[in-house]
Image 1 (cartoon, rainbow, N blue to C red):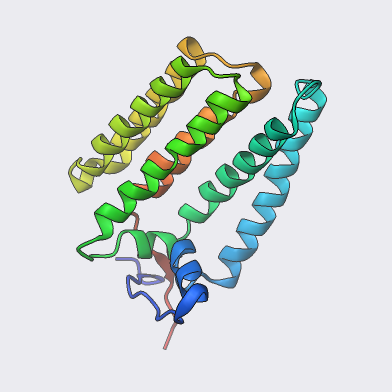
Image 2: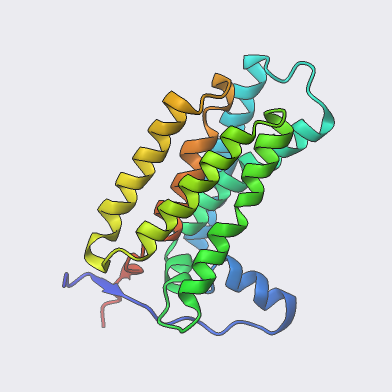
Length: 205
């Protein structure tokens, strides 16, 4: 163990009601620096995504529903990558609690709605794309979740890479939407499902 680093798994108490549920969803005990990085990253990466989609011209002729789905999912995926990588989220979602595994898998499964929205609204009813990515998500999540702990990180990267390559070569979408699959699988298979030690700098006595 490094003398200047400590691992802190203790989950801070959260308030009752809606505020507490929201804090637990994002990860209790998030530091100001983590929040600052999330906010800055969301602004910068969200702006780059918006600029890329806009300059591509793919949006010409889009319905309001397509605009809304692309905007909301884009922000959710970028924010989700950043949030799930924080110490606060790792500490909460990988705590030694009986329902933690179920909560992780339910969180991943809920993102099938993202695939439905993209496939049916943005990609005009592309069921092949939707079902194939749903299978990749559920199979990949099961592989990562039930892989022995020492191998979770490399296995998650292998599954993430495989899912990305399948999308690039066999589940093609218009190039201005090619960001979806990498961000989607990065958020869920790597950032969310891989337990990592919540590190912080050790305070000197």
